Image 1 (cartoon, rainbow, N blue to C red):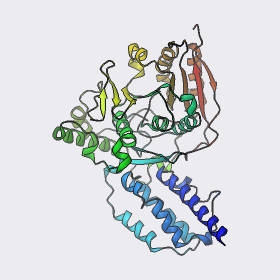
Image 2: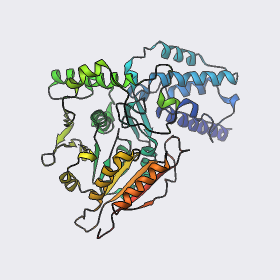
Image 3: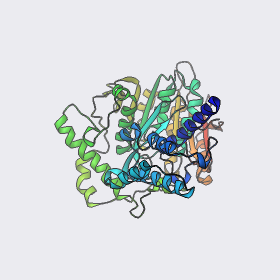
Image 4: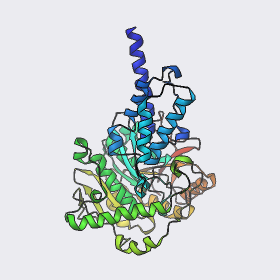
Length: 436
């Protein structure tokens, strides 16, 4: 009997873990796996187990500190209700009460930004604030894409390879790959880069959320006025409020009004458009005030220290191995590349637009041809979701034309995160041969 009870408890814990990780990653409800290898019979779904599911998800402290979108939480609890009704289960009152509470909460434009929390094998988590829309403001960088998840898994399995290396990530987006590497690998340094203003701001905050010392103690909830702290609180509160209001407002312009399930929850993208449809009188009136100089990126946070030798580079004051740089491939300064001199270059889902490939490959060529003090050259690992083979083949041709060699590396053996992989995802190892 004792052995049976122990087995049952272990089974329930596994079920809760599976549901919890999917919930906090905001796996689309239609793709959520309720019945896994750890499933139990329908007759064993007791009110106690139902309460445990609620406590592990919508009632968990993580949901309060780093909440998934309100529309997703509603859809999640509603789906539980429907599934329990379908099997004629004895539904606990807490299910109805929780769903009612969620319906009463006001869904404002703030719901255009949400948190996704990813659980690593070691038990650590990575919480990212991101847009609920796949493409926003003319950039794909405000959401986490499948290739970033895939590359994060690969880096976790190959942490020894990254040990004591200077790592540079091109197109870091919201930071999942980099934050995972910084948590799992003993790298010498990690430089996050991106070129989009709003992406860089959210990237900066995601790094702070996951690495600031106070987050390990109390994990505070950030309000809009806290998002971008400055030494001058009165001025910064006003500026930061405008910044977050602008981001949320512009994201809400892109929202699909007809369905409470957002694009990121209810559809899988097959092709990426690089243009933004967002436009409004609000943007025209406030864009100059909020983003006065799109060519400059100034970090106004006490958590970051500017590098006196490399303009635009910032060190995270609680771990100087972590760095942040505004970097545009198409207007890159070669001097920055020489100063960076990375051992490893990472990038995920950057191969989707033929028009930017020459600039990307040119940067790769310059970085990979640099010789270190030990005579070795850097190696790049580029993860891509193969949505269009013609686009992928074009990238390979551009690589070859620049004299770069490439090979496909083995995919990670274990899948850590929950993401759609029916479309192939591959990681290319790219190098510049000696003498070229």
